[in-house]
Image (cartoon, rainbow, N blue to C red; front, side, top):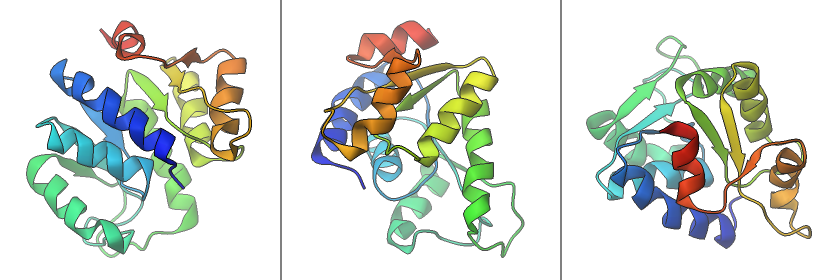
Length: 167
């Protein structure tokens, strides 16, 4: 579940990401993923959604309009055939594609056992850069990002942190 802190961070960072002609890559899940895609498109940027089901399936249903818009203005990728349902293990598997497509993985918010941490781990395995937005020690949504930073991920405090990792 995205907090207002995560929302504010995305809305602050994405205009600069787009202005530097960087493409965002995310999983079209509700919360942070969806907002990254929405903010990128709102700023006339390029975005790629990697989904854990067939291209003819919308999941979650609440992102139907967003998925249609990305199909028209961005790129939707899936390794699954038409009709493939969104199964739990598909989302873990699609995270390796997200990590593989990026130069740097930025984790905005993550609970202690979040799928975002799997993506970050996969990115590190592929020698990609990992950044994490630090958060309150009292927020469950910041446990994962704070752990990433403690383990050596770069703290994402401002746009320049991203730009130094990818440009």
